[in-house]
Amino acid sequence: MAEARRDGRLPLTLVGGFLGAGKSTWLRHQLHAGRFARHHLLVNEAAETPVDNLLLGGAARLTLLAGGCACCEGQAQLRAALRAICETESGPEAGGIEGILLETSGLADPGAIAAMVAADPVLVRRLALAETLVLVDAAHGTAQLAAEPLARAQIEAAGRLVLTKPAAAPDLARLAATLRALAPEAELSAAERGVPVPLPAGAAEPYPLPPLAAAAPIRPHRLRIGAEGGWVALSTWLSALLQARGEDVVRVKGVVRTPAGRLLLQSVRRMVQPPETLPEGADLPGPAPPPRRERSC
Ligand SMILES: Nc1nc2c(ncn2[C@@H]2O[C@H](COP(=O)(O)OP(=O)(O)OP(=O)(O)O)[C@@H](O)[C@H]2O)c(=O)[nH]1
Image: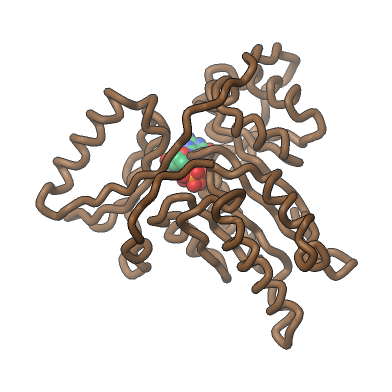
């Protein structure tokens, strides 16, 4: 875990991983366990309607960077946020935090973010990269590694890899061996919703990975749900959509108001999470967004 540096620079921890890998879930567990309690959390979501901020209520200081991936089009916003935190930390309020933790969007290459910090004349003097942690969804990781250049870039940038959803892996030992082959220097472990679990013992054959071709861009879309359709209609439509086009719908994440309260809806490919009731009172996600334009990293 990140520790304050003797050279006076603030430790910066990057938490990355593909869409739906389990970054927020892992982080929620860490906060619940009292880790990163004195960190400033930066949460980046490529989508314009943020949700992760609702899940990370345990953070003492949280800044949301929504509507652009921080490794590319949202980089200026990230740079400004990091500089602002560094500015605060060099003024009269210095010492308020022990470090900064950035949860990247699932479309981000943490290597590009680390390179941005290293190349920035201000940030490089104020921040020290403490760790690049990349979460890998054990249920979908093998398919992502075969098809997505970004998934491989994320793993190659990692100093530490955590396999999430280990029970859902088709063959956890082979996926672990594949990660070790791709990132031999990275520490590798597994966790179920943030709780460490052992990796299978013994050697396994890495999956053969095909040469990468350019992947189809992944684009966020916002779905506006009117009150008239109702919760039952929405869940029926979503189930049918994922059944029919689950390979094309990489990730669904959103909040809907239902007679049972505010529900967080989530799916990763065809894996649908039972809805989670969100406490009332917390801010609803984001203001109405500006007109949307398509994007990808
Ligand atoms: N069984 C299981 N499910 C998990 C685990 N980690 C995350 N999930 C589920 O996977 C889905 C995605 O988890 P998130 O933590 O939101 O993933 P994320 O990486 O923050 O997602 P994005 O920010 O959209 O990229 C949710 O439905 C989680 O409940 C895990 O270790 N085990």
